[in-house]
Length: 265
Image (cartoon, rainbow, N blue to C red; front, side, top):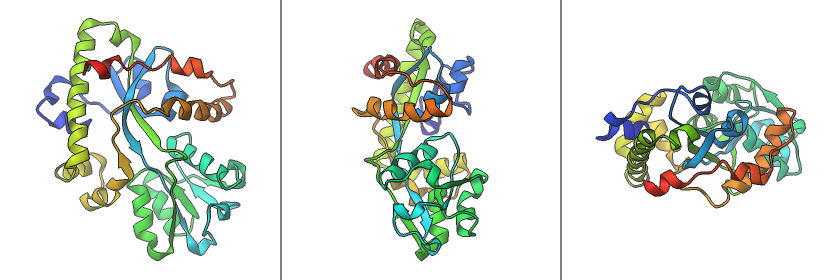
């Protein structure tokens, strides 16, 4: 989004910090967020347009904590941002080793200190988006052990809007124009990302070299993935349990998808 904003078409829209919640309160006409935040905070009028980027998560742990396999995470301390896609990533990963969330201890640390917490021994492992995971890998060196299986789960970082915007002819045209600019930016980031690393570094507050080293842990489908509904149906069970409510049905979740803007763009 920031690359698109920095391009020739950027004058046609304004970028603010936020997410799905800004759609619910009317603070934005479109928003990006992980599918997790849509499931947690999305209101009935929010629509899923397409997935912009995949976050290819990994769990980074300390070998010196006695961890050499996912099963070794039992009883260990994991730092992660609660109620996020990075939090959810741990759930199916643990399940693949016959473990559950109750088998580990979640350690709460500030997001910019999570890698440091693992390096310093205040936690045994980290599940966090880039480049904080890369920070942990770099800081642990040979003591790092990495668990990654993005066939089990990857973050589906998507673009959303509202039924009000979709039904407003002017706003709809503006949204299509924005998506076209976004698709151009995505293509550049897929084929020649390096020239954009300084902007990404400035925007996120991380050094350029760290952005470059962690870049491979992202993918850019710019589409509605075939398995996205399947992923959301399973994740909805986890979100519903946390919110103490019944999970929405597959049919109810499917009704939130609207691919028409992507098709027009």
